[in-house]
Picture 1: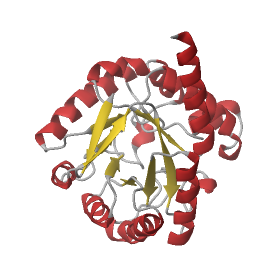
Picture 2: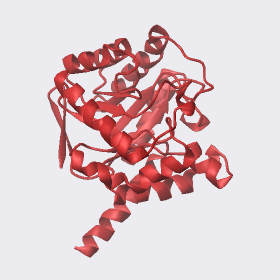
Picture 3: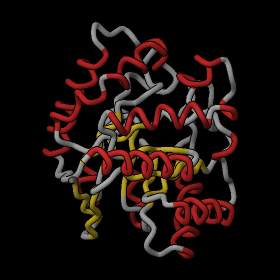
Picture 4: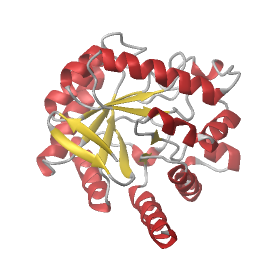
Length: 278
């Protein structure tokens, strides 16, 4: 069991938790996750929380390679009103801000967010780790090479699992030195990995247990699924649930998903099977 200290509020990971994705932009690859208006964001968050989501992850810009990059100020203007709108309806909601800008992380936590989710693990903003350390919130550190525009060219690994493992060892130490007490590791499916590398990484997910950190898996409706199957992201719910189930059996602690209800069902069914086995 892991615990997460969110500015003095203690959260426990006694069982796998579901993180619902809401993109406060119009660029993210799955249209069903996009909401521009704060009231619409709050409504979507309400549905996710009622379905059983433990966390809501808000992102102000897409990290798809073909999406336009926006600056910290524009991103802040998107996510801060959305955070406030959710907390107005659900004061106890645990909100994660998906950003690689330390300035956005600070503003989001000041508005009420309780986690920071950084695709670059501090590589795109040298102030990020020290900022999160001062904010005293859990930090989701993802593995990625380069940046969203260059990552697809940086997939030369001798062993992708070993490379990600070594990256996490280094990042965990850097986070500790920066004063970050709770780090969650995200292998970064789809970020600087080929399709085969994504599946190699998922098939050996249990290799990361030795790091003794919570593992977050984000494969929901991604191209590693829909391109492999020759379908669209809109058609990838069933296949996403298959991989979510596999990830849970390989030791995932948090699933970052577009479809909360389906992921909750997977968690509940696996828990019943485990109970019967015991």
